Length: 111
Image (tube, rainbow, N blue to C red; front, side, top):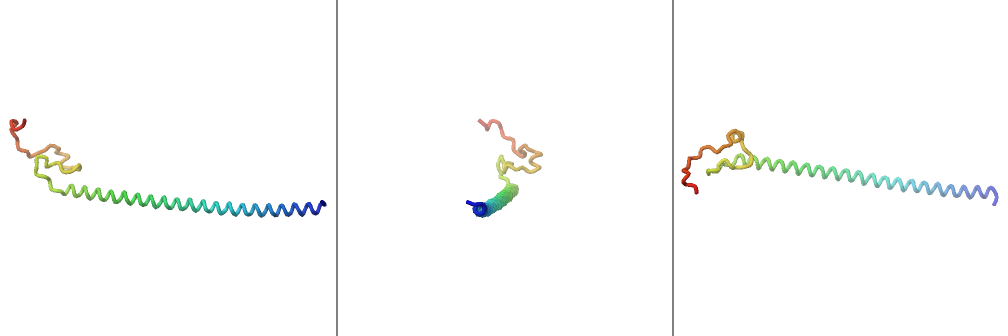
């Protein structure tokens, strides 16, 4: 094998190696793009999930406020325990926590 043939063989191998490197770069680039797409898609889905959760929290809060408003507007019961209406108390009820307006009952009525 002479010098020129050796050069030709090495040049051919170098060209094949260059083509292989270019193919590898192309594959790597496409894999990187797939990964980036996956990450971006994941971020978008996480943002959508976060928005859904925030919407649910907002709806639940609004429903709780409506229930509390309805409880505050509800007529008091005319029983001995008429101040028992809901866990939420008005400012007046907090200032005067004792049951007022009850008639005195004879102790002999109790067992």
